[in-house]
Length: 518
Image 1 (cartoon, rainbow, N blue to C red):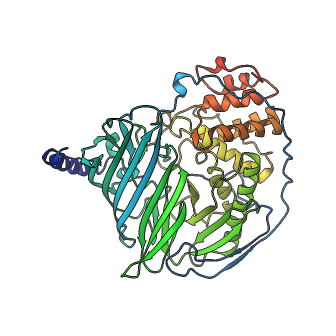
Image 2 (cartoon, rainbow, N blue to C red; image 1 turned 180 degrees about the vertical axis):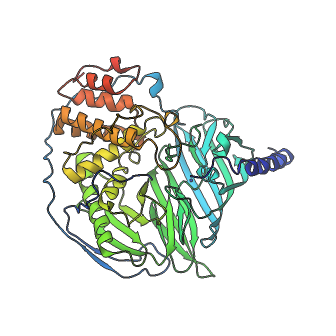
Image 3 (cartoon, rainbow, N blue to C red; image 1 turned 45 degrees about the vertical axis):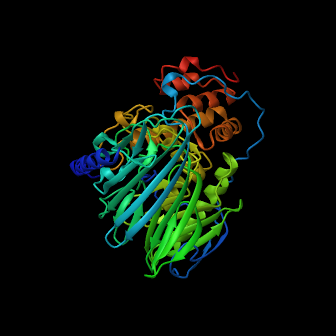
């Protein structure tokens, strides 16, 4: 992981220049191996054929037929007895500290050289408050952490403005706009380099260009997280335009609106996504595309490098199909028409989740488990939003639980490591050590998986999944906190879960939770 703040002085210098201009003119992985390394190929029969549906040049031709070996029969889900909807007020520390806004991002990549990793971008973010005057606005700028980001200009309602640089350049803060609507503009340059080993979402990995966490995005005022999971945003609408050179194939969040041929042979894509928390892309020469369709009608696309073994492609496609159908049944429907997986290069140890798109290293020998995990994040982080720096157990522990459950029909439960877990499950990112990899993996992912599994066993499958479906219905495209999750579980549970919660967490409001059923 690159050292924080290496290019802080460059950003400060640019902002000083911007301040002078303003005065004159006035005014962007995560999963690591599970216990088992034996590939588990899920049950599914999926005819899959290569297409070039999202490319600027024909991709390699391939046909994949996904096998249908036996796996544990899934537990039947019965219709539960309705229970009262949670209505108790969130405690003070369980408030969502994000601006309550409707947001539309318009991102125009005006120059792109995938060979050097150079991009020039114009961004406009249109905001409309849903609850009074707009507050001070904090934009997370993940590529600044790696030294990839250069701010070339900023505006508020089309007037020049100098953002306040915070958190070693990771946050750009815009003054509170006057009123309930505003348009924030950024002009910036990205100069990507070969990524360091491990997770990084933005950068070059060989001839693969990763564009994840690549632009300023509205969040709250927090530092760069040691868990390498910076996404904490509300859902928004995105329109993205990017020129893709000949021979390159593009995988992306959202759907294609138009393609415009350019004089140099490139193709300018207009892409659009609604009700997503982020927008990511990946591009490389001659990616091959395998496709499948789930029982629920979701199109699944797998983008892989030429020469990727057929078995790896089979495993990833079939695992994604199974996960999308099963989690749609258990929790709630996957709400988008397409789900994409893209090979992200050998430096990525596992995968990284983005809305409608996940990055994968297709050479790992636990690819099925990795695919389950990253697909599960479409629900826990994507659809049901979380506060990843404050409550990482909800999405990472939950994705680990769902990953293992899909492989074992929810029979797998990890044991504590020798000497126990180093950190409590309710640790925040600030409580966890920094360093390469995921230092809190045992304490958050595996301990979180064990906690979810214990709740599942105590509640029973029917009550547990009824509670998860209620969380889906109440917080789809919104954000949950620990209060919301524990309260919903407690109200649906036939047994009192509060002793388990008290043994697990130190939240000061646990005694405010009602008895089972309210």
